[in-house]
Amino acid sequence: MLTPAELVWLMAAVAKGDEAAFERLYAATRAKLFGVVLRILRRQDLAEDVIQETYVKIWNSAGRFNPGLSSPITWMVSIARNRAIDIVRKRSEASIEEEPAAMEAIAESPDPLARREMTEELKRLLECVGRLEPDRQKLVLLAYYNGWSREQLAAKFEIPVNTVKTWLRRSMMDIRECLGL
Amino acid sequence: MTAYSDDHIALAAEYALGTLDADERAQVETMMSVDKHFSAMVEAWQHNLGVLNQMVGSVEPRPEVWDKIRTAAGLSEPQAPLVLPETPQPLLPVAPEVTAPAQVADTSNVVDLSAQVRRWRNVASFATAIAAALVAMTAVGVYRPDLLPDSIRPKPRTQVVEVPTPSPTPPSAQYVAVLQKEGGSPAFILTVDAASKNLTVRKVGAAAEPGKSFELWLISDKLPRPRSLGVIGNDDFTTRPILAAYDTDTINTATYAVTIEQANGSPDGNPHSPPVFTGKLIETVPPAVPAPAR
Image (cartoon, rainbow over all chains, first blue to last red; front, side, top):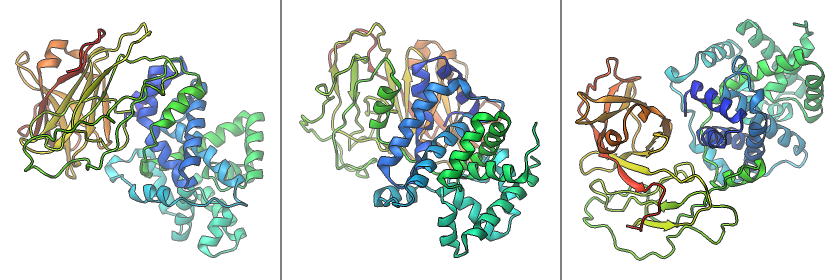
């Protein structure tokens, strides 16, 4: 992975229509974005579609990236993740059949971060998440990583959907206060 | 900044977290389009929660995805597709007893020209090979790291395919070095683009021990001491424009070496271990004018 500063530089070049920079940006970030969306969609074909749409959007709207507000990778992940979640929410009634191969790819990828490799922002957030009650910590992290809906979370935790709603809301407000937003 | 109710704040946060249903998501998107402060709040949440992506493992998409993106985005210079033959061989063969590379006439080893309907950009594409019996520094090949799948697919020989090009931009020379322990498996593969002097390191061996880092050095008799080319990251690829500071001759004749340094690299610009892996560059794609296959 390139450094955040290198990615910012690439993003600026992409915003000017530099195709070589776009290719480098893709090479540097595709595996992260694909890992994120595959974990949510659990289907190789759907994940590839989302990656394609995401990078086309990045190519067309790189100029809207504001380095003062976010990092390139987080911004790009947000685009990909939003698209993936839109898809799973719309398909939720006809629930997506998981692909064993896709599941394997996910299972093989560990959470690869030693603490020293985390950014300060991630450490801060994890500290705040860590202050939540254990069940709510899991709730928030599963929601983020797996893109689960309240209904899926309710089933997983064996609690009513309304309780999930309350927990999520309370957790978000606690995190907000903890982060000093 | 507008003061928002807790309901609005929670809605923005849950949008970023991803737990809203389809209707609520559409509602948030509508609100974002008409209220830039609300939009900024959502984006702030997306960033604050989005740092969690650092803990998600990477998964390589198939190379075809990039072709689709190029087409969909309307990029002007499609690339030559590189078709690598399937091979049953593992990434790093564990058969050091083998003393000679297998001689195999493999006609499947081609760059797929027939699929080519768009303009060619590259003059030459290479299929790459780390031969089964790679003992010394013999592996060469192509190297388009961005097109290759997760593993490098070993092949018994190297083949050059010349392709006529209408492109006004001649490709630059490509150099490859395989860094390895004496008699050991390749640990790092360096590729250098002669024109941009971009250096890409692909890690194919083990990761550094905890608390240690692999650091790459350029050793040249034109220079009084080894020059650091930086710490090799834990990702599969590390790309740097760092060679721009050196002239082509120095780059081409230097020995590249990897040492084990403390985490984040040597503190004083000098190596603190003997070179663990070393190698030199080999030219794999000649510049501009097509040359005969070797």
